[in-house]
Length: 288
Ligand code: 13P
Image (cartoon, rainbow, N blue to C red; front, side, top):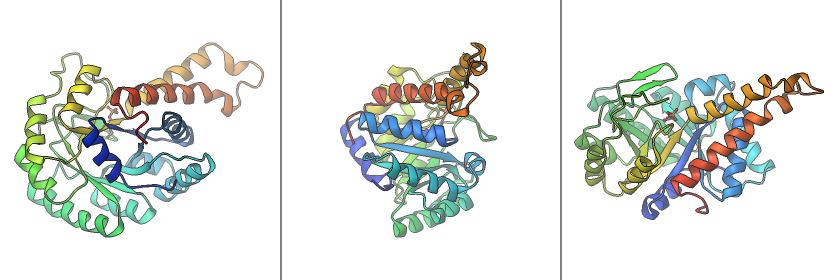
């Protein structure tokens, strides 16, 4: 199936009280592992690409070519959206041009009026071209691609203002953080999430910083309207751990163990296991 935008999968997720995972990709192995797992579990999936990862993979056109090629060659039948993660205004335009099916415009660091103006322009372009668009209110804490967010809780009235612009999905800061959570993390603010959902109604809400959020908090967040959950660091940690084990066991020194197709295989399997665990937790298995 060719790429789809994220609108239908997220509308169904919100109505069905589950969440679709966005898993960020970094290279061919990442993409292949995520797509194969989604297909095996009959789950819709969103492939996230940060601007930094886009550059690393030789630009958005390369990413679109790789993903489209895999959808066809791997006979992927489940709905897959290719989504820019935390895009700038210029980055969003570049991805729309390159053939992404979905973009996030992260205007959370602008004053609200500027966030509204830029989001409005991009909503109009995405509507015209049939893409889905995610907006953000209240920055997500921690560091993502060198962008450090303070982790504030979003103002529900500002969320409503942005939701009313016609975005497909809305990321609201609720005390979530990118990367590993610190020991003294206060947890998600369900009070904020509840207030945001009450103001924004059917709007699918997005939970960033999915790595390391305890299962009970994930389930509660889904019950309060979260329909998309982003996971990045956890796949990186699984990949690194499995690769470290392979090297530490000296497997690269045995026979043709240095062959990259062998060297990267345990990491790729570890990504699959992490993605499976998350899809089961989010409830998206069998929903494709
Ligand atoms: P983690 O790296 O904490 O999983 O966050 C991913 C994310 O929110 C991408 O936007």
